[in-house]
Amino acid sequence: MSVLRVTDGRTHHLVELPALRRGVLRMCVHLSCPGLAIGAADLRALLVGDVLFRAAETAGVQARHTLNLPHLPPEQVKALDRATAALGINPPAADGMAAADVHVSGTQRSDTEHGVWIEVGPVRQRLMAVPGLHEGAVADPLALRLALLSHPHREPIPLTSRMLTDAEQTLTLWRDRVADWARSPSRPIPDDIRCQARTALADGLSTPRVLAVLRHVAARREIPDGAKFEVFAYLDRVLGLDLVRDVGRT
Image (cartoon, rainbow, N blue to C red; front, side, top):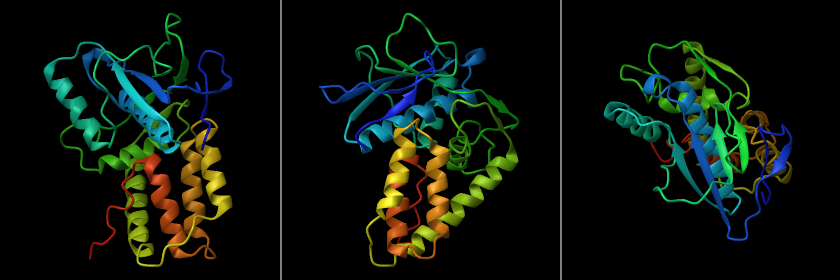
């Protein structure tokens, strides 16, 4: 994956991310935090930024990112740190980074900022408690990550308890299968599967298409189990769903 392209929110065209001679991709994730509280829409913006961060590093480009957010009360700062850790989001760099090449935002973009803007659609939250963010949420926080990554990042999404239940069941199934496949001899990733996955990520950062590749691989009987394991492990480097968690467990 040598090139990454995303839809610029300013032009609505698919553009190539800056090919930097210094080999560093600088990102800024903008959080709106309505009412000075972290919400599901903020988590979605963080996840989109994290997938881009992971995709860049998988492509061999060093990535750094910072957060742009209002001054939050101490309890919300703790909630943000808790949610970031629970959802497997890479922590931001320290302050002092130069102007960003890429901005990720679910709010109105600023014309005073240069660089590519990645729009993140709103989240219509229909949950009393968001996993990883609110106490009392019982679902696996990575089920929330899977649910949000299952939809194109520019489109609005209704976040329901049924979505989390379905996502958690999928995670359990995939982790069980990955642990089982890991017992077989390793096999190379089929060229067509690698091409499909790279294209999905490189053209528009389409996590739904990447997830479709995983479902396709899991269902194909002719692919050796060792190759299926390698596909899931490779793509999980970008998806961040901890799919290899149960490998080696009884």
